[in-house]
Image (cartoon, rainbow, N blue to C red; front, side, top):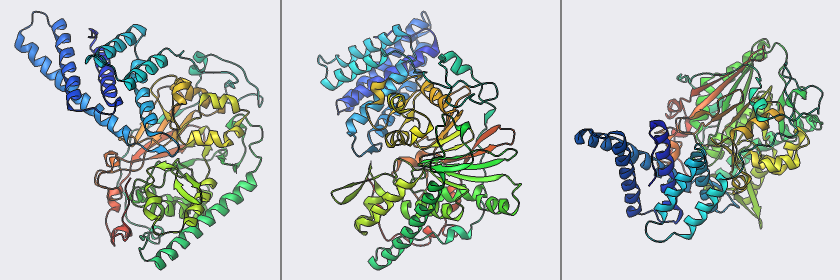
Length: 583
């Protein structure tokens, strides 16, 4: 049995780590039954009693019992929450070519690694010894438990380093010196760099007001009638083809503009070169940016984000008077799946916004905008893929082939000044080191794919073995900082990860990582009743880049509820004709 620290904060962390590990090992063999759950709860009670006995020697037995009962109840609640987290991990989407068990084990291994890494070597060994005693308590160790334990121990013994070769050191004015110049520096120097004034403000909560004619034309369900749905889909495909043509035109104009640039401050103008898009801020200009994260078929959340920020009105005002702040609307991808209004709600609206104001709207590709063709059939590249699975019985395969072409045409990342917008995160360390020659290297198809799938970890550095375990992989705090400093950015804004608060600022320090998740709502009828996304309080993000170069990031609550009524949302005026297919 592990000896809990006399420091209450350390003891709390020990208990959190041990409970997570016990729960994980319980699930690893595929059968975490009631008796195993009772073992976890009994172990918690024994550990609490041991800690109280040591801390309250000679105390009144009734007082000791009261403390034991309170802390046992607390840690039993911790266990229940962890058990729900593990169950959610079991149902998370995975890439089509990934083995679900391998993905689940990698994610659980990551969380164990994060929790255990907060302790010194002696503390880690004590936790592993406690796990050994627990998994061997019944006289045998399941092979899956033994394998998981060995791999976790190996990860914990990996050197805690990050590669800083070929990084460009910031000078005093934030430039990079001569293009391509580079010097090696240590982690201390990397963390000490002050990349400019960046603030993250508290969440604001404002109600949306009214409706807009722009949206009314878009709010209609697909019909189950073959002739009618064929006409509806042809109109949607015509919109998609128009968007592709506009992206291709912009891509042709921007071809080669990346050149040999190593850092974003070497880029000029506003261009799309391949799948990298950027805007170099003009001197004296203010940029007012609305960011929406994963929408996943939540049309009400999209409409709320546009209406609350008066984006359409601000575009109109700017074109009447270009001294006004320059309005931008950045979508972080994952328009489809999970929610009910995917192709005919969210994606249709995103494309209409783009073709209506292409200089003001940036539709980034998410990992769900990923279809695969095999033997003449089109499949969703993420499992489950509700959007395509719902419509497959009603539409010919060529419809999805054309959507696949649209997804391939979308930009993968956008740079505004020193802020990077991307769906997932950064590439794997090893792949980046092998392929990096400059910003144009991020056009590599494999790196682009990785940046749609990666997630931040609370650990400083994630070992290569854990990064290589599945398509959806983690990166650490120092790995993010190393990447941002390499490309000359100081903030990365991303989606991809279900954050129940809807917004999260992950790391302290001068290099920021912000996650925005815009799908959710406890009673949001855009989502199936059993969707875990109903636990999310969806957020948008307002970004103001001022003329002096300072940037403020302000999350805001999406007022999706205003658009759950037939008077403000045509999707609720009539019942659906095609039933949404879950899973």
